[in-house]
Image (cartoon, rainbow, N blue to C red; front, side, top):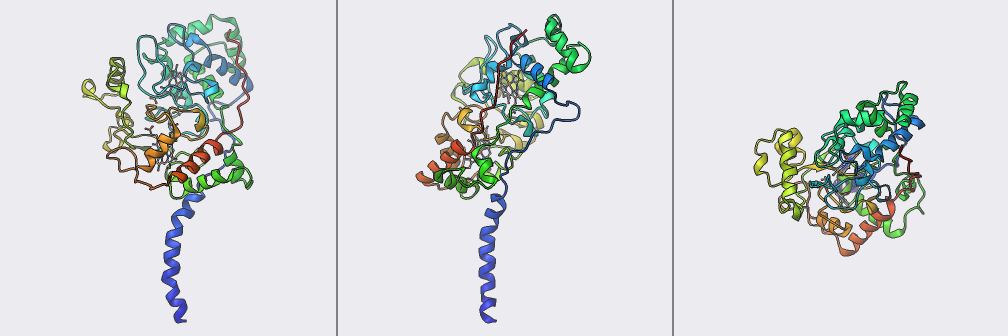
Length: 356
Ligand code: HEC
Ligand code: HEC
């Protein structure tokens, strides 16, 4: 009797230590099929049309850029630049994210300013520093091409090449870009040979000591939230006057009063104007991470080693979102092995379209 009473606090203590680990460990999930929204049902023809439009340079004002200029299929639909490409004579200010697994995101863009793919698709076409196109003109350009008219007729019932339909078709194509059957998925479904031993150790750090699953969890390793990790500004951010023009232009558009003196990327704050969102950015997917560098909203880190060191140090100066982790050199290598090996899905079967 006496003995079991004395055991109780010990048991409670053990439970309290294990509980957070147990809660987080269950949070990673294998990928499930994408569901299309009711207002934009999928069809093979719509996906094909969307793919054509995605690769069509008519989408840019000067006819030099398609979506695939900055979202390159071989690079998991990112562009390999720290700061993404741009419309001639301008400069972009952020990194082009992967378009893989978009369908699992509640928010799109680093600051979450779009909430659906349909809503997102027209932004880059209109953006002065991306494709700089006029939508009335684009509608007429597509309309003047008989093949497009025929395909719009087939997909939508009339041959009207409206901007809304352009966005619907692009989104249908994007919904097919899913990273699936990665070693992590097979491992979570019970195949314990799917991950090498170092990668399994890395997974344990990911869900345990590294605390990565506080934010990177579920099917797509995201939390649909924004965090100010205080990643330093990219060195070119305040050096290149073209970036300053872009930064002021966007900030003015979002009614940021001091847009002329802005020295930083305000992140989510631009959209919400809430103090806690100052320099907060969306938690990105880590799937296909081997192919999506440079990393972070501004491509500040070129390698995963640098990213892991950054998290190990407890993030950038002044952040309250992270704490130092005290990972050993070996633990960091295991973590990297998991990220590289565990999150690389099957290659997406892909054929480049022929543009009319
Ligand atoms: C000039 C380079 C460029 C071009 C061209 C471009 N993008 Fe992007 N794309 C970016 C950058 C940079 C971002 C991140 C911008 C931000 O978050 O503020 C982005 C973000 C996105 C996102 C959000 C992804 C996420 O995870 O939040 C989607 C979706 C997207 N682009 C689709 C497209 C489509 C569709 C087109 C063609 C209509 C296109 N992009 C053309 C550079 C480009
Ligand atoms: C507090 C939430 C949070 C935690 C904890 C966290 N992350 Fe992140 N992670 C983010 C956010 C937010 C970003 C994007 C930051 C930005 O763009 O400036 C990010 C970005 C990344 C990126 C770059 C992805 C890309 O495509 O640019 C990697 C890799 C990454 N995290 C890995 C990890 C690992 C490994 C851990 C654990 C050691 C971890 N994260 C812990 C929120 C978190």
